[in-house]
Length: 466
Image 1 (cartoon, rainbow, N blue to C red):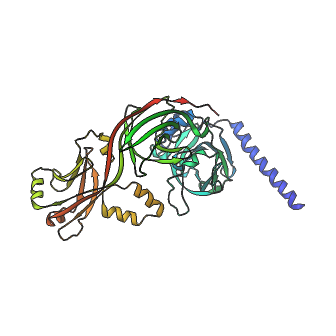
Image 2 (image 1 turned 90 degrees about the horizontal axis):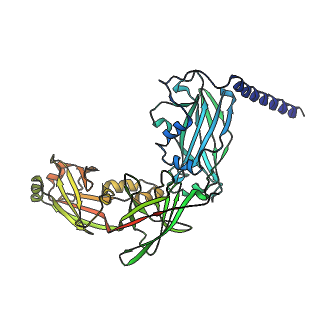
């Protein structure tokens, strides 16, 4: 009985303390002290701050148009540090990263070095398969990346974080698109650190909302076909969503097949090489999402990379080196319509590998090319975890190996693209190269491809809101 009375007294005391905090806020109204703009980056309004964050997270504009952001805020009193915490927005980005914005009340005595900080240990998701799983998170503050100064809006310290889920081994998870369809995210093991005071928070379940089911807001049928080798491939359907646009395909194709597609919707077209993925509706290419709701779309399928099984080799003799010193290019070999050659850089100390074709190939296709030392790649692969190995292998570049006349490997320090889209500089042990002639040079993992240039454009039909 005495314990029960004690709990009642404690409950009454806490309720009274919370009442005093709220009463004091109402009595005093909004803070009227001037914020030192030499210490803080002061924004005139929440919308101006959100616009600034849009530079770091381009999806925020689209998310607001879809009703994902701008919902109900959650206020959490922090009595022991005489502040409050407001959680403003939350959404799941592609690959499971959670975007979270929040703010603390600002005190006149605050300095950039003693501001409160929210720490989050783990997250879980509801409404999807594996809802009972929790994931440790790598918490990255992105609001500081703007100019280094804390952000203040209406006497509140605004923060924006990425919460990136990790697997049990501690490596970042790369394929968690399913989190995007969750009903809510549960913030766990969180606390606020303010000066020497640590305030533990209860778990916070934050709803993940959208005006459209699965945040897919528009779609259309395409039914455009293309012949790849002897097989017909049909681009059947296109849908636009928050985290990605999906271009569905039907037909027979090798699992190694990759597609080089240019987004020509905006003023600055860009190309990306895509792998095929699967979901409950079939096979699709995971295209980049739009920055805002669009009713028209425009893409071009430039090339299809069928496999990366090719290789070319050349033995560089003394006569070849002398020709290169005179400015000549030496052909290493040709594969799938692309000629690979090597020449000396202007300084005569480093090699340059270039690739050319007589066929009509987009410059964007060559932008996908990257060369890495075979030894460097193998060392990187050997120390990686099983999950990381799958990712490394899926992104395996063209591999370069060079050996002297005694079959000893010549050290390649690094490779780097040059100004021209079809040239890559090779920084290597030049003394070993010139003294070890004849030198064998081998390029492997070369692409076999087919030029397509198929227009994929059309009008989108908006879906019904929930």
